[in-house]
Image 1 (tube, rainbow, N blue to C red):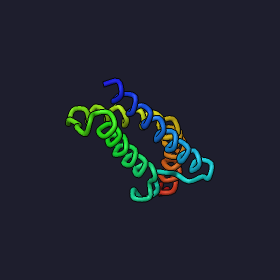
Image 2 (cartoon, rainbow, N blue to C red):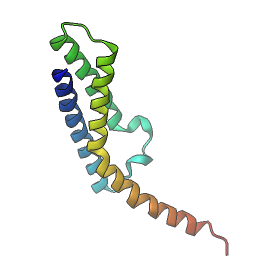
Image 3 (cartoon, rainbow, N blue to C red):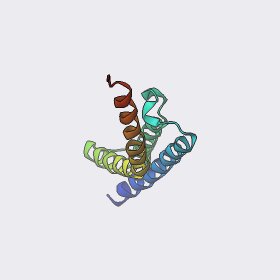
Length: 113
């Protein structure tokens, strides 16, 4: 179990850090990441690649080729939680900053007086 947690935490922090850098780059370029189509979102590729590689490492190098369903679920839950928490601050900044501006502009342009 300690290797399961270590691998998940390490991969979650690595993928979350890369996702954070991606979002920070978009922030300074003035692009909103939620307006991209889903298939252009680089975080999905990070999430899937690091998930699969983490489970493969756990199975092949630490579990002698066996991985139970519960171990895989716990590992991916830890990974996903850390990945999301690592990207959360910049996501909240995008949501809070840009959506209120959008609502103000949208509601102001559609009012008929």
